[in-house]
Length: 338
Image: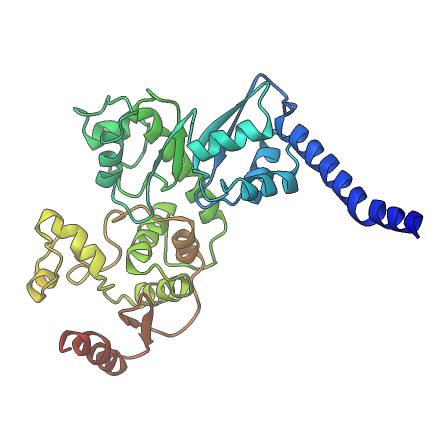
């Protein structure tokens, strides 16, 4: 009986404890052993909102092989999974998974970053660079036109020409270096989008597609509505109708815009007033992202000619002016009378 009890004790108590101790030892060893790197230093970028699993995959793709499940559990058990900070980092020879995780949790970045947001104007981009403590300022006395000349751009107006994205850089990089990268990225994204355009669009050049995309970017942030709104503008362009889009009017108002757009603003002519001038405005009104560009060159095919905001980020569409006026009364005038 005693022999059987000892056997059962060994089987169900001691052996699991030994196994757990061995596993813990192996895990500790893995966490603290250097990760084999291809070079002395390897740069990698952690995107905003990345989970430990996404970080482990980012590391592996960058040439920093870590055990994905081990990295995830190490982050969770040490409660560092919610502390990981987005940004540019560097792995060095001798770094272990534990050291990498600690670096990510502390936000000990080797590189800096600046984000140009979709829908930003070029002035907002310049302000972001001007206010960044790690960007070397070289463009304070350089006009927009002179900057575009330095970039070798065929378009003298900078609006919409710089792709909205997060740009990682080393401290001390110049504002011009970062803008050059954003300009080159914008050119590449635009040319790729233009090559994938739907046939028979009333858009003659990639620049016209960029202008339309910038309007779509400012009109809606709802992914489901972008292509449909694009279709409305395409239908209007084909019929020779005024585009009558408020964001372009607001852009033309410049500093005079105080948060409200009035009837007299719609009647005051500027190059960007699409209530007084036919066709597209002369330049983009903001920096469109990929989704807005895709909507501009691949619009939804339909017969809608009007749309109005519902007030929740989505839009209500109409095929004729009577239906549109009813939608305006319901969604715009109704909200104002509440």
